[in-house]
Length: 251
Ligand code: PGA
Image 1: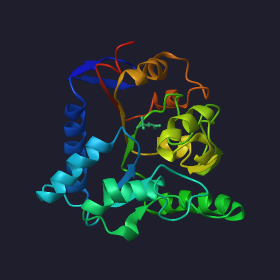
Image 2: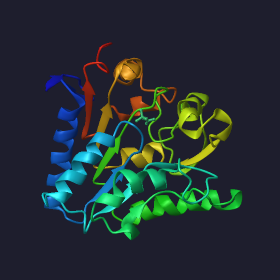
Image 3: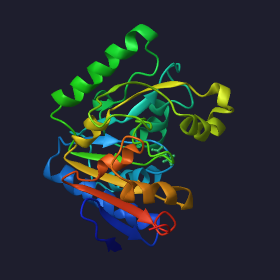
């Protein structure tokens, strides 16, 4: 693992994504061993899937237990029926929750199907629930091709908290294939805010593949700016970015 020295975002370039997944899974296991009731921030998408596989393996071999842990996911599409195949609720069940000993009542995601009137209140309640749980000890994050973190799309303020957002066209286009067409992709979501994410005590960010190379360069080198919300990660007291060689190729 090669490390790139940067004043404000510690960056590691790994030979394979598995190397990053194993390193991060080991760190999560040690956080949870030291603090069994740790609060973890979780992400969905292609990026964390191998990490979750490794966490599942560690639970199966009893190297790790989530029996006393609590989790909060970053975000959820709005307007999906419970159990919708593309909901992040369903995705988390399939890719992590269904295979580990985390009690379901402590696995939190924003509501997907609150009506228009209820969504703002749900967002406020979600932010309060994170605070009441003591805040996030370790947040897992990917970066969208447009620089979003969670669903904090370009233009999201640094001081934003959990709220309802309109999805950016790049985000909706990236989701179109799995939804079976752009017209089926929700237009809105609930997301933790930039400030919510940056309140986590540790941020661990993953980016894999050539399609992330441009946004990785902007994340590290652009002026810190809401046009590229991932630049707000820089300067966090304990942030680490793991890249495979393809994602690092523009550095
Ligand atoms: P991906 O998405 O993991 O599917 O590339 C990352 C993100 O949008 O945060």
